[in-house]
Image (cartoon, rainbow, N blue to C red; front, top):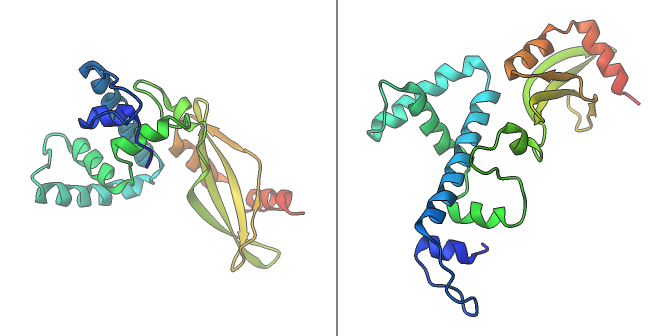
Length: 202
């Protein structure tokens, strides 16, 4: 792990040899921690946006059990319980690792930065799948989404059953709401899905 002077100061450690003793004011430390908390909140929000609606209730049941066992359950604020549980589920980095990572890439947003900034380096995520028959062979069409600019964007990845090779469409979805994008994916008829598949084949 890369340890920067800022991390040492936040943790109460001394400055590395040769770097002197740079001053980190309490307000600076609080600002860094605030940025980190905002990053964690945004990751939790992203998780809750990409899971299907029907999965939210079972997830909350698990969250309530988890929080009750630890004395953290917010009976009057179920979303706080759900968000706390999601934060435990996500492999979020500790503050020190996140801060060191910020020195090398711009993927981590600052406090108050909207989704557009967060999503620039985001890879497509598979969020739904449909089975289709094409040429008497079974295929799967997987909806892959990513946050691009101010909207959710998506494409379809086609894969024949039992094979590793796959074919992708270009971007064919753009919606403000992820569920609207999912609904459009499911609204396609079998003929439409087959047409998209044919368009991807060499």
